[in-house]
Every structure is written in C-alpha cells, then in structure tokens.
Image (cartoon, rainbow, N blue to C red; front, side, top):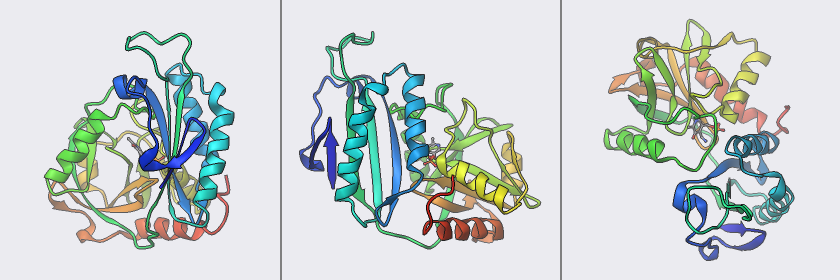
Length: 280
Ligand code: PMP
C-alpha cells in the first residue's frame, strides 16, 4: 500500500499528517474513493469533478492543489500498475492552531493512497436494515465528517446486516450509509433524485446511463418505506460494492433471497463495460 502525502510518496504505514490537521480536529475535508480495475481508474474524471465540487461547497481552495494532486495520482497509479484496488483521495483545509474559523494562510493537505483489493466478478447479495437518516442537510458534499454514516453502518452490522438503508421519514428513503439505493417497480428502475439529501454516486450515475442506453425505463423520485418493502428488486450501488442485490430488508426476504433479473442484467453490463474505457 502506497500513499502520497503532500506530494511525497511513502509506504502507507509511514505516511503521516500533523495532529493539528483540520480533518482530524473538525472533520474539515473532502474525499473520493476511486476503483482501479487492472490498474485503470474507473470514471476518474467524474470523481475529480465531484471532488472539486465538494471542495467548492465547503469553501476550500481546490485549485491551489489540483496540479499537485494530479502528480500524486500519477505516482500512485504507477505503483498500482496492473492491479485491482482502490485509490483514496483526501483534501483537508490544512494544518493550523485549533480554531473554528478558517485559517488564513494555510495550504490544504492532500493525501492520495493506493490499496489493493481482490478482483471480484460475482454479484454480492446484501442484507439490509432501515434506520433513520441522522445526517446534515448537505449530503451531496463528500465530506470527511462521516460520524452518522459510520454509526448507521455499525448498527446495521450489529443487526446482522451488511448495509443500512436510511430514511428521513416513512415517506422518504434517501440512500445507504455508504451507497445509493435503487428499487425496481414493474420493470422501472427508481432512485432518489440527485439533491442535497444524497450523495450523487458515480456508480448511481453510471447505472442511470446504462439504463438509458439499454432503454430500461427509470425515474429519479422520492419513494417510501412501504414502496421499498413492496419492490420487485432492490439494488445497492457504490464504488466498492459496485452493483449489489439486496436480498433482505429488516429481516424480510426480497426477491426470494436471490438477485433479481434486472439487477443481474445491470451487473453483467457493468462488468462487461470494464474492459472498455468508460464511455462518458
Ligand atoms: N452515498 C454515500 C453516503 C456514500 O458514502 C457513497 C460511497 N462513496 C455512495 C453514496 C456511492 O457513491 P459512489 O458510487 O460514487 O461510490
């Protein structure tokens, strides 16, 4: 595992940031997780565009570290050559004496890490539980302050599940603790609109693009807990979980505990498209 920290390439165990880093003290940073398939980053452009948007949303000057990040990415990609894995990028507001106000003359800290992951081809089957969405009102920003997300994930694990599906009210399912949620209703793919209540997942966007090109009907709209429980299929999408089938919600089986036909089709198309450059 390798990390570039402020442009310096080191084995990850040796890469350090100061204790006064703002992300450590305030969760004051933004990040991205990018999947590498045989050394090739998936949707790199889209991830970097989202990083830039997240930075702007927290008033962090991404422009001043963009070139350095590019160089770090190149160094990391060389180390990752040909491997499956993930790249984690974090841009923090920098190191400064602890004060809630933004520091005036501080440069962002930039971390870029490569960790190998096993290549997998089989579709994952996930158990889920529903939990209240306790996050703030800007879930579209990919910020490092993830306490509500990790608490939800941990509660899901303690209920014997793999992922938490979050809701603002019984009428409003948002997304997973680290994923987006789709449901299938009579052949139509339905997912939450891309607004402040969810992170607009790159995998989510890719699935919608796939649906469009395969002429699968889709809708971006809010749906209820009842609709979720009555859905024909439920799908989790994320960079790390890719396209996974939900087989259980709150201990009730979905789709007889198997991946449904549309889930399998999207997964197959997704896996098939990895050998080509992402067409966006
Ligand atoms: N929502 C949340 C809250 C997430 O943490 C993630 C994973 N980063 C996603 C959705 C999925 O996003 P992506 O497909 O870009 O990984």
